[in-house]
Amino acid sequence: MNEYVKLSKVAEILGKNKETLRRWDREGKLVAVREPISNYRVYRKSDVLELFSGFVHFDDKEQVSNYAEPKQAYKVLELFAGAGGLAIGLEMAGLKCEALNEIDRFACATLRKNRPQWNVLEGDIKEFSFPEFANKIDVVTGGFPCQAFSYAGKKLGMADARGTLFYEFARVVNEVKPPICIGENVRGLLTHDNGKTLNGMISILDEIGYYVQPVQILKAINYKVPQKRERLIMVGIRKDIDVKFNYPKPSKKIYTLLDALKKGELFDCDVPKSIGAKYPEGKKAVLDLVPPKGYWRDLPLNLQKDFLGGSFYLGGGKTGIARRIGWDEPCLTLTCSPAQKQTERCHPEETRPFTVREYARIQTFPDDWSFEGSMAQQYKQIGNAVPVNLGREIGFSIVKFLNEYHNSLNPI
Image: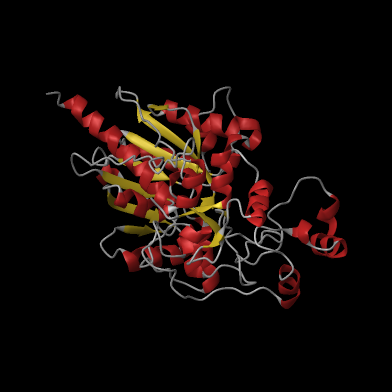
C-alpha cells in the first residue's frame, strides 16, 4: 500500500470536495503533509484510515491486467510506423515486428537506430507491394491519415478511395490477408465528413473480406499512460474467422505527470536530462503568472485579451491555452511542437515546455529509445506517436485473439 494519497483521491473516497479537506487541514482534523519526492501536499493513508476506518477502502487492486502470452510467434506488418510507439508496444506484448513502412526519413532513422534488426521499408507506401508476406503475417497495423473520399457509387468501394492513404492500407491488407488488421486514428475520424469517411473505410474493408468490429475510442489515461490522449481504433477480422476481438479492459488507476517524470511505478528513475525548446521572452513573462493546473483565465483580464487575441471573444473554454500542467494530473495531449501558440503545456515548476525526454516519458517511451533528427524533428516524432503503453495493451488483445484463433484451427 502506498504511503501517501493525493488530495483529489481522498476527496473522491470521502465524498467531500477539496475545499472541505483544506478546511479540515486548517482546523487540524485531517492534516496534509509534504510528499518527499514532489513536495506536493498529500495525506498519509494511515491518517485517513485511522479517522475513517469504518467505511474507507483504498482499492489498490483497481489496476486491470490485460496480459496474455503468445502461444506461438505472431508476426506484425506495420504501415505508417512513425517513430515506433505502436511497434514498441506490440513488441512488449510479445508480437514480432516483421517489417515496417514509414515515409519520414527521420522517423526511419529512429527505427533503425533503436532496432537494427527491424526491416524498415523507407518511402511512400504507394511504391511498395507485399506479395512475399501473403498468408505469412498475423496482423497488419497502421495509423493512416484521415482523408476524405470521393463518393462515386452508392456504396463506397476500393475504386472510390484510390489516391488516399486508407486505400493503400486496405490494398496491403488485401495483398497480405492477415487474420486481423488494426487501424488507428484521431478521434475526429468519427465525425469526419459527417461520419461518411469512417463508414467508407468500413465498407472498403467489408469489400475485401473483413468484418469490422464496433469502433472504439480508447483513452490513453485508462491504459497506464499519464496523458489525456484519445485514439480511435478500428479492428477488421477476416470473414472466415469466427473469433471475436475484445478491446483491452480499462484500468481505473490514472497516472499523473509526477508518475511520468519521477521515479515510481511507471519508471525506475527520474526523467533523464535532455535538450528542450524554450518560450519566447514575451510568452514566458505571461506564463510566469499562471499557477500549476492553471490556464489563461488565471491571467489579469488585459493579459487574457492580449494573449488570446481574437479567440478571446470566441466560444469554448480553450482550456489548453497558456496551460501549466500540475504534478497531480495527467498531461494534456502533446502536440508536435511544444512551444506553438495556444497549445501550451508548461512544466509545473519551471516556465518552459517539456524537454524531449519529458515528452517521451509522457508518451511512455522507454528512456533508452533515442530519436534522430533535429530537436524539432524529435518533438514531431514523439507528438505523432501512439503512446507505447497503449500500444502494449492493444497488443495483449491481439495476442488473445490470435491465441483463440489458432486454438480454433487445432482444437484439442
